[in-house]
Picture 1 (tube, rainbow, N blue to C red):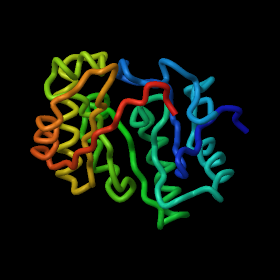
Picture 2: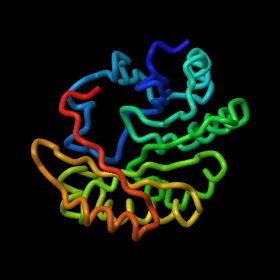
Picture 3: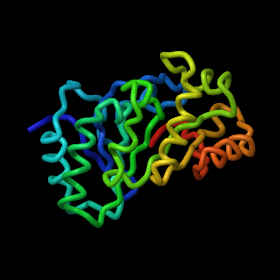
Amino acid sequence: MTDYNLVYTLDGKVYINLTNSCTNDCIFCIRSIKDDVVGANLFLNTENVSADDVIEQLEALKDKLSDEIIFCGYGEPMLKLDVLKQVAKYIKEKYPDKKLRVNTNGHANYVYKRNVVPELKGLIDEFSVSLNGEDEKEYNELSKPNFENAYEEVKKFIKACADADINVTATVVEGYKGRHLNLNKCEEIAKSLGAKFRVREWIENGY
C-alpha cells in the first residue's frame, strides 16, 4: 500500500498523478506555490511507480469514477509512458465506458526519439496539449523547457495526434499576473495543426 497520492479527485472527476518529473518549469505551475490539489498532496516520495500501484489506488476510488479519467498531476505523465499504457489498458478493459484523457506538455516524441502517439491509439481518447504561446519566445518565457526547440516539438506532437485521428485540444494559460496572450493567433495555430483550442484561465492560488 502506497502512502502518497497517485490517484485523486477534482471537480467530480478522477485524476492520475504518475510522476513529479517534467521537461518544463512553467512559471504559472501551481506546484510551485502549494503541495496539494483540493487536499491531496501530489508530491511523491518515489518515482518508482508501478501500474499495480496506480490500479490499487484507482480501485479504492472506483465508486467515484465518472465518465472521464485524466492523466494529470504534479509532473508530465508521458514521462511514465509504459506505466501510462498499462494503466490505460486496464481501465479500457475493466471500465470500457470511461473516456481517457492525457494532459501533456507535448514533449514525449522528443523524449523517446520516436512518434509514440500511434502506440496510444485505442487507449487514449483525447490529448490536451499545452501550446502556451503564439511563438517560441513566448513559449520559452512561460514554460521554461529544459531543451531547445521545444515549441516546435509541441506543435509536431499536436499534429501527430491529429494525424492519428485522436482528439486533441491545444491549450493556453491566460492572464498570468496580468499577462495576456494573443488568443486569436494561438487559436489559428491550433486549428492549423488539426486541434481544437481551449483557454485556461490562470488560477492564482491553485485548486
